[in-house]
Image (tube, rainbow, N blue to C red; front, side, top):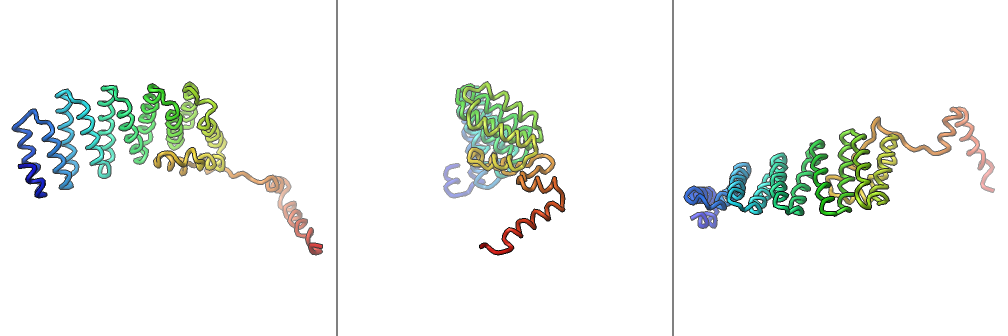
Amino acid sequence: AAVCFKNAKQFDQAREACLREAEAHENNKAAYEQAGMMLKEMQRLPEAVQLIEKASMMYLENGTPDTAAIALERAGKLIENVSPEKAVQLYQQAASVFENEERLRQALEMLGKASRLLVRGRRLDEAALSLQKEKSIYKEIENYPTCYKKTIAQVLVHLHRNDYVAAERCVRESYSIPGFNGSEDCAALEQLLEGYDQQDQDQVSEVCNSPLFKYMDNDYAKLGLTLVVPGGGIKKKSPNAAQDKARGPAAVGSHADEEEDEYSGGLC
């Protein structure tokens, strides 16, 4: 009956049929998920997610954690544009299930989605913790180049939190990751921190506009492009400008006159 209602696009009746099936067959966990998908077709997303979550809990109780994690991911995708906060929670739950099953690559995929949503929502304290979790697992599976990229993301998050000390510590701790010291990622981060510490906006912008930063995931690239040093920063001045400032306004005027007089008689 549920299938017939679905084919006829009578989603409300299809949902009711699925729920009645689930209640009649306590072991049929998928019926709750199917009912949730009917609610999705009706654009009743919070209710859909609630039913899919219920199905995932029953999958776990029934000893099928992989199916539970996949259901949680599906629910996260459904609700992501409506309630990013709920989506983060669902992705983190899915990651936890995958990690418990030692399916670390799938866990990392879920954590990555959660981290990006946290950055997008400017929940930077939570984003910093989520990125640290990702980085720890990448280090565990010896995917060191990705650890470098996560370090860049961490530093950008910390600097947007106005926590230079945490950003510096993050880089310092990463020296223990094989290959990090001497990598282009390490050199760029040291240059970034130096510019930020000296309030040199030009240097910071130069690093953040480099391909290494611009071609990161979009949410992290935006952090780089919008990073402003404390106090508004300083601009690098030309040597002549610095000398003119030291010599005063009169000197600046005479310097300009000299340049003008040089060609006063014509090019010949």
